[in-house]
Amino acid sequence: MPEHTAASRLRLSGLCFFLQVLNILLFAVFVRYSPESSPGQCPPQLNCSQRNQDSGFQQPRFQDVHIQVLLSFGLLVAFLSRYGPGSAVISILIIAFAIQWAVLIQGFFYFFLNGKIYVGAQSMVSADFCTTAVLISTGAVLGRANPVQMLLLALLEVTLCTLNEYILLSLMGVSDSGRSLTVHTFGAYFGLMVSRVLYQPHKDKRKREKRQDMGHQTDVFAVIGTIYLWIFWPSFTSATTVHDNANNWAVLNTYFSLVASTVATFILSPVLYEESTPRMVQIQDATLAGMAVMGMAGEMLVTPFGALIAGFLVGLISPLGFRFFTPVLHSRLKIQDTCGVHNIHGLPGILGALLGTLLTLMATADTYGDRLELVFPLVAQGSRTVTDQVLIQLGALPLTLLLATLGGWLTGSVLKTKVLRCSPDAQYEENTVFSEVAEEGCDPRASEKELGISTVV
Image: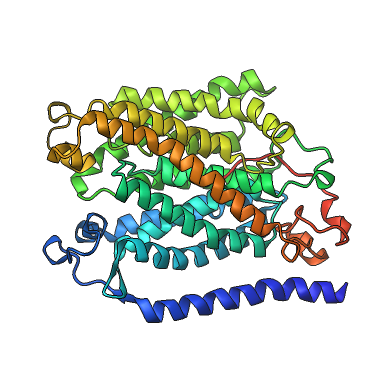
């Protein structure tokens, strides 16, 4: 047992040391500060469509996005009473590593020139978006993967997420400023596939709780997380707009969707559960779902009443998913979705992509005016018809699902290797970060406690 304890500690320590040294060396060789990021000075060899955003980039916008990632995503797992302390620690570790790795990987795709990666303020925002997808995925495998596996998941997912984003946004010209597809949908189904691959029948026979963890501490964390979501998410959805006057629609549509989805939870919760009012964690879920559905459509011509309708519908679908879809995922598909990412990111992301595709039919100069150049530049320039743009927007959804599931299967296969799946020792069981994915013959006490079906991320 002492040897196993030391090995468990040193495995994570050694991997962190190796990855951090690797990042330092790669930064030393490739990364440089970008020149003044004005449109006239952007070298034509670089992807100026993203780099030129630095010219109008404001520090408060970056702060809002980063706070959203760190607090609203990274610390929301603290409301899970069983996983809270340890999972919050590992979330911060994942954020710290994934941002560095995303700057490098995205740099090779977008900011690479003459053998160097030129980074600016927008590089950090893009890295935060990619990190968000990783945090969503970890919500699906929480309690089934140890910290070493979580860190390797971040390593692989950042690479695959960037590839998906590059194909959709740069090669195909998909409009997805709020990242319904590249963050919410990709992160959710990537994590679900990893959870499926990591499934172990002999570890999943115990009874699972059907409701969220109870307790005062749970509600306190959920209240704090929901408040941060309400404050900072509109900045998150509008952070990639090129001009300040172009983000008004995204902010307004996000708020309208948010309020409608919250009210919908109060309508449906008493019907589904024996409670007169929803629990705070259900409000938190509704907030996340209402915002995710506006990812692609936020900057489009949704109209205020359209945003209310979209938020209201997703506010009904999300709790229905927890009540009916989640048990099916576990019993039929053998997917343990610990934080319910399928209901608060996956389904709303798909609905947001379909809504954005439908709204693309209205992409004409008469309806959008000067804004058409910002949302659909290829259509405004005449190099692509509205029909072509609609088909491309629609085709981006199955492509994202394909890349997410294939990437999740590949990542899960790597994480399931024998050397990575030994269960934790008693010290780590107290933090409850490690748990189910265990090699037979390791400490069996890792499976004594029940998993809770709760939502977050």
